[in-house]
Structures are given as structure tokens and as C-alpha cells.
Length: 404
View 1: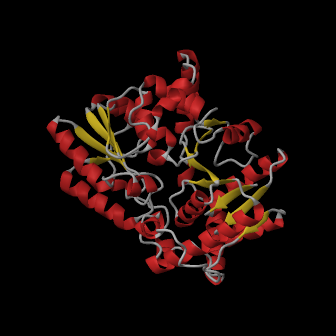
View 2 (view 1 turned 45 degrees about the horizontal axis):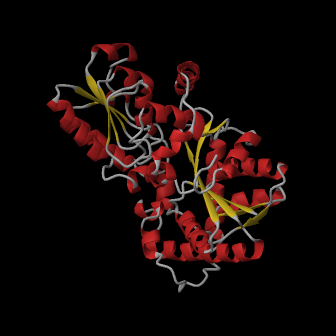
View 3 (view 1 turned 60 degrees about the vertical axis):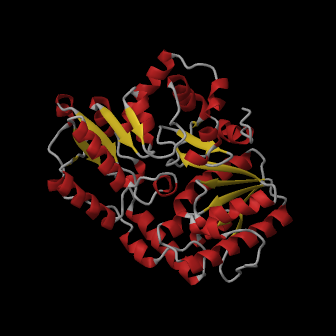
């Protein structure tokens, strides 16, 4: 029996597609969901689903050291769930999953990222009950999905053992160049994370209301929900530099990441402001401009205000031109641990990585094997079709030692 974890409505769409594909293969699927709207939709489609609530908080004397796991969940780190409620939520999820594991003979649990509060509780319950785990993450490369049995990014098997890539056959230049043309066309479009329809916003609000009324777990503070919206930076703040003018400038490019992202908060000693200060010092030392690009999905207005103030103080330039153009014409790229660092390696650019990430030690051969062999292919995370059979097979062929 496979258990799929849904911790947001966005994840609901992905895991529903995956469940439909797994059922067609004859695999038995059950859900554990923190989103009441997801729970209702799944039950309506005939799926078995469990919805943890603080009405059933479980035994808070469970013999595990949960304090650190709760403290470093991304919601507590970002201060969007108070610690007292986080403790109650954690044990509600842990107790429910132990019950499900015992009753249904769960042998594998699949989730997204793994650093959310409910995912940390589930991970611990699986570890103590010897249940296999699998973690997904968006790759930011067209139609490719990251999957690892240990975790994502710095926590993955790949980060600890990059030599896993050496067993794959070498990728030919012709094959890779053909892919690069598709990749550049994909990157020319707006990133899907930055586009949210009014319908999805209304559904999110309705889901939040249901979660509040049902004492659901993982509910963020309402103040955060009000602030969680796409930010519009005044046009006057952007540099007038165009893509065509980049080749005439010597500069360092610093792509910022979403300020509350797990990769920044949990896998780096630098935040965006620290990265700006680092890159600015480096630019002055080498007589280069510093061009900074804010992540399109940034939604923290307080953090953005700090960036704008730092821009006034340090005199770097904020740009809004294409990331690929900025990479191609740069002298050096500085990143915390974003995919832009991996993209910089694609163009064989000078790169400094400030955070902890899986690609830090890649050479050219490993980079191409990661893209074309390691990642699960033909999966559009933002799409609507079922997950292809070949992708499902890859997921279940990948075990602890990644014998694929």
C-alpha cells in the first residue's frame, strides 16, 4: 500500500494525478491530507483519505525527540505557525500515521520536499516503523521531476553521494544541444510559480476557512495569509538595462530566492540580504557592476522593503530581464543554492554557491547525467495529465541505493 501526502492544494493536483496513474497500474493508494478541500475532493473521487485534526491530538508523550523536528519545520522557522500549535499538530499527524501504518500495511510514503511540519512528523513515524520514503521536488527544468528516497537538495542521497551519477552512460553533445534549444524556449516563458488564477486564490481561501473550522493541522496564521500575495515592484526601481545591452557591461549576476523557501532557511547560512552584501563586496573588489534579480514568486513585503533599502545604500542595480540572458553575459554568478546555479553550469560560467546544495561538486559529465538520466522525465508538475507510466516505474525502481 502506498500513502501519498498532500500538504497544500497545489500538491493535491500533483498527487491526484499520480494516484490516478498508480491505480491504473494496479497499485493500492491511500492519502493523508492536511487540506480539507483536498480531502473532500479525493473522497468524492472514491479515494481513501485521512484528515488529521487537533481534535485528535494523540499522545504527546510519544517516546521520540520531537522538539528539534518541530523547531526546524519551515512553518515554525518562518514564524507562520506558533510553537504551541505546531506541537499539537505534529503529534496529531504522528499518531494518525502510526495507526494507518498498523492497519493498512503501508510500505511506502511519498511526499513533497519533506521540511513542512506534517511531513517531518510523517518522516519520523515512517523511520521508526521501517516504512520506505520518497521525496519529490520541482527541478525547474522542462518536464523533469526530482525524486530521491532520502530527501531533496542538500538532504538527498545525491548530495551525499554525487558518484551515483557515474554509473550512467555519457550524454552525447548532440543530444544535449538538442535539449538545450527546448530548454531555452521553456525559460523564455513566465515561471508557472509566479502565475496564480483568481479561481485558485478563492479555492485557497475556502480551504483555509474549512481548515480553521475543522481544527485542521498545519494552518498558518491568518496574518501571513493576507500578506502572501504577488508583489509588484515599482518600475522606477528597475535598471533601464535591456537584454541587448548586457554584453557591453561587466557584471556579477545575483538571482535572489523566495525568502521563506526551505533551501534558504534550512540549507544555507546566507539569506538574500547576506548574499547581496557578499556579492556587492566581490563586485567592488573586481570593478564589476552587481545586477540583482528578485524571484518572481517573492511574496514577503517586509523582506522586499529591506532589499530596496539595501539597494539605495549599496547602489547595486535591480534588473527585470531574462535570467538566461543575465547568465550568458555575466562575468560571474553568485547564488545561494537556487537552480540558477545549475543553469550557470550549463553555460559553463564562473559560479560561487553560498549555500548547501546537491550540484555543488558536479563536473560537466555529472551535470549532463543528472539532467538527462537522474531526473524523472516527461513529468510536467504544473500540467493536468496523468503521470506517464514510465515515470511511475522510475519512482518505484528507485530504492535506498538508487539501483535503477
